[in-house]
Amino acid sequence: MAHIVELENVSKRFVIHKEKSLKERLLNFRLSQSHKEDFYALRDVSFDISVGESLGLVGHNGSGKSTLLKVIGGILYPTTGVVRRRGRIAALLELGTGFHPDLTGRQNIYLNGSLMGLSRLEIEKHLESIIDFSGIEEFIDTPVKFYSSGMYVRLAFSVAVHSDPDLLIIDEVLAVGDQPFQEKCFERMREFQKQGRTIVLVSHSSEQIKSFCDRVALLHHGELKFVGKTRQGLKMLDELYAAEQR
Ligand SMILES: Nc1ncnc2c1ncn2[C@@H]1O[C@H](COP(=O)(O)OP(=O)(O)OP(=O)(O)O)[C@@H](O)[C@H]1O
Image (cartoon, rainbow, N blue to C red; front, side, top):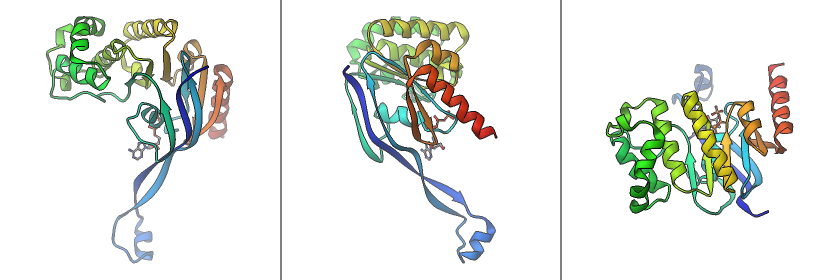
């Protein structure tokens, strides 16, 4: 089957700042209070995502899921390794990504839509439908800095699904939407599945992953531990969690 994304030995390094203890400062005869350290959020991750599949990305807090989504979506460059992707991508990442706080909801539809690859004409064509799906027409001319997190997600999801993506990337964000809106989103995502589009979903809800994903990729401390059948991956995730609790 054709691949929409190929990841080859992808690593992502961040530089983190650490406070020195007083002892360390005295022993090193240095007065600076912090030092820099390399931290690998992803290590040597390789796998492919096939056209039309729904892949769940699972792992504990801090395991590298959001970082990997950003690398897949082209928002972050990998430090080493190669990412190949095809088609139009719509990414729903951390709240507020791709939005300007001082602009209104309506203005942000133009901003966000163009970031997702829509022309002004295409945005105008879908404008009413985007506003309608979001269910926040009353606040559409209010600056988004006054939006609740649920309102942000409503607008962001609506723009994303109207951008005609080949690959839809969704980080945890849907969790902040209320139950009826979440159901509406999953309904729309199921339509996407039927149309043969590809979806990558991060969720801490095993039920959501089980009911929605054909396969899962399991990250643990930045390393890919498993890619394959959803039930098997979720079982491994539980085992890793149990091992860490011991
Ligand atoms: N810009 C950054 N600078 C430094 N460290 C970062 C940066 N972004 C992420 N990290 C670190 O990389 C690690 C992985 O973060 P990431 O957000 O990808 O995890 P996650 O699996 O999505 O976690 P969660 O389930 O809690 O959302 C974490 O330790 C995080 O602190």
